[in-house]
Image 1 (spheres, one colour):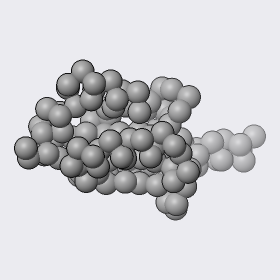
Image 2: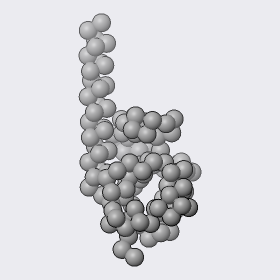
Image 3: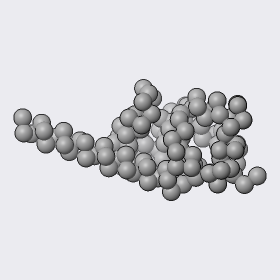
Image 4: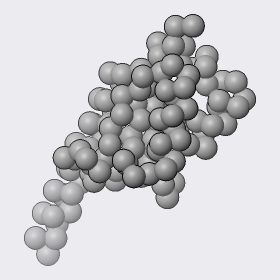
Length: 121
């Protein structure tokens, strides 16, 4: 029993550290995309942002040393079954590909990016 409690506490500590890493990256960059290099929806998000003239900070979770722990933190943050892509704008969690596309279509994305300092035009 004590080993299970120790493992559980260790897992919780890793998740908290990963959540703090995600928050630190998001708060110190105008736009951050947490992605997986082989995820087609992540590619859609990156291409849309690049086409708008945004140079997001991209974190490829499958290539990052703490990728699995950060992905677990993103699952908790998003509350969905899909952790990536996860887009942060101005330090705040925007959402995944559906939220990003909906924001682009309804015209709220560009002002949000300008407010975050990701666009100057």
